Amino acid sequence: MAAGNIVPADAVVAIDGPAGSGKSTTAKALARRLGLVYVDTGAMYRALTRAALDAGVSPENEAELSELLSAAKLELRPGDKESQVYWNGRDVSKAIRTAEVDSNVSAVAAHGSVRRQMVELQREFGRQGGVVMEGRDIGSVVFPLASTKIYLDASAEARADRRWKQNRERGIEHDKQAVLDDLIKRDKLDSEREESPLTISPDAIVLDSSDWSLERQLDEAALACRVNPWMDARIDWDAEKAWRPLSPKYKIFFGFLRLVMGFLGMKVMGRPQPTVPAGTILASNHVAWSDPPVVGGIFNRGPIRTLAKEELFKGPVLRGFFNWLDCIPINRRGYDERAFDMAREALEQGQNLFMFPEGTRRIPGQPGPVKGGLGILAQVTRAPIQPIFVRGTCALAFGGNPQSPLEVRYGPLVRLHALDRLLAELDRKEVTKRIGTMFQSMLEEMQARSFGDFAETGLEKKLRAKQERRILKKRPFGEGPPAGS
Image (cartoon, rainbow, N blue to C red; front, side, top):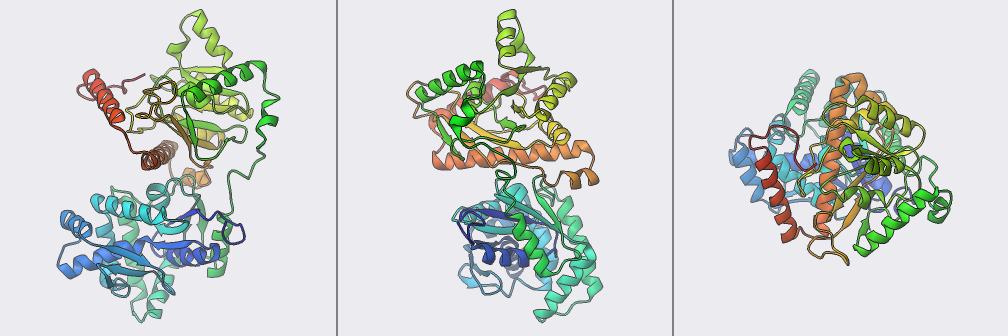
């Protein structure tokens, strides 16, 4: 642990926000306070912009910019006040802090291929240890599983005044109105670009620092890092104590599943022996029919309601079995008001709800897209979300399948800190979409970490290709819902 056990040594603090909101200043000071490493993502884009201007490459030429970045060695090193930036071994720390770079960096950063390359570089920096990173899509794109997400905001006037003073300290003179006009222009470019636009991640803690001193801004950011969603509710970490009050049916069912999963060689990654606060949405990706018992059987701390397709309830035997398991039948061909009302009531009563936000089985290795059910329930109930990634359920084998490792991986518990802010600015459909986008990014990152620990195997690639062919055969023109349900 760092800084007197305030945050874990491997913490990732993601600070997003518009230009001039004080992200860099706050991130640098926060990294020092928490004993973490500061990664200046904005300087990375500035370095590419500087290199492009020096090489005569237009900020609008995506292909040449991408080629320029691919061939370069970009390094960030600790500095006294700011990160020292090296481009192919040359220190460009001062050269990237000019008006010319300021006016061109947003255009450079707007290109999709450039941003994807930068994201990979940033993830490499971040995975080397505990970091504080700042930018305009760090929490939403680069590190969707960040332990803390902060959206640092301020009025355009306050930001322009800070930028003007900052430039004067560097010996750069600008007209204050010109600085304001440039910030407004950059806000528009950053928020309207197609690739990774500036947005507030639904789980970010929003800090409006318009009227704050720098000291207050830093104190509030440090406090945000201590808002641990795993610790702001009563949670029973004693597995044996939690097991005792379960009803007999749950003890039988969970015990049976736990025994079977042991024979199948399942590994649980992430938080050891996870448990969650009462009234949590347990949300998992879905690739095989066996996902529900594999994932659901791990949460053996209390009753679970599960959203299950209504087709499973056909016939008295199956209907009786799934009713016995407290499943909620849902019609997936549209908005099922009855099913969502039952799910909402269950969450409000403190029961956990297990669901597959993708709505049906998806192609292994290709999480998403996420349907609207997760966002609708999260908005109505304000329930926390437990992201889950499952792998290896397409080729189960007793003793474990070395070519298809069975794994259940947990992300950090998600609380939608920014929900009120988003609802004040956007309609509910857009907020629902953003929650879905956030969750899909989390699934993709958990999959990337899984593949990083154990690379995708030849068998898994064959299974993915087989499912792709099946879907193409069933939907040759791409119409209709995904196959696999």
